[in-house]
Length: 165
Image 1 (tube, rainbow, N blue to C red):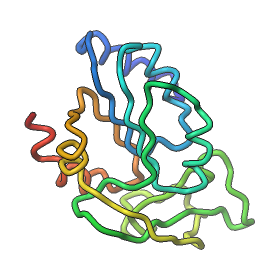
Image 2: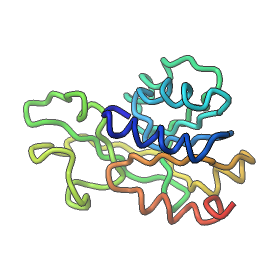
Image 3: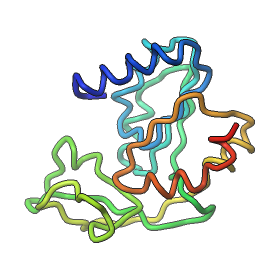
Image 4: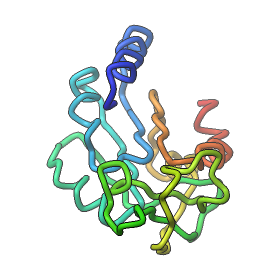
């Protein structure tokens, strides 16, 4: 929710959904959006998913009582997969690139994070489906925010029961 337009869209969502028990933020990065979401829906519990270990460390620095932090990826399968991290050519990770990770390689993305970004760091991450997470935790999303640099379709494939709930 960095831009004025994004904040405006969420405020419109608030008008449509006045009561919200559970917000799922998939690709939570460093938690920048958490205070804003809790301002809109203070009674909500946020389930924040972030598979990138560096981002997850920063995410959990947000010591918020009503947030469940999960250091794995959502996808259409349960298991493990490669997590690609993106760096600029000079090796730096600017604000966007410091958070850029995806289950998709640059070649698989519809639009890469930057034209000069390269994937020069990969790691393994655990994956589960949204359906599995919801069933195991007996929790269902009222609001689902996806920001996963191209793997949104795979997440939705693994959410058929959750979205029908």
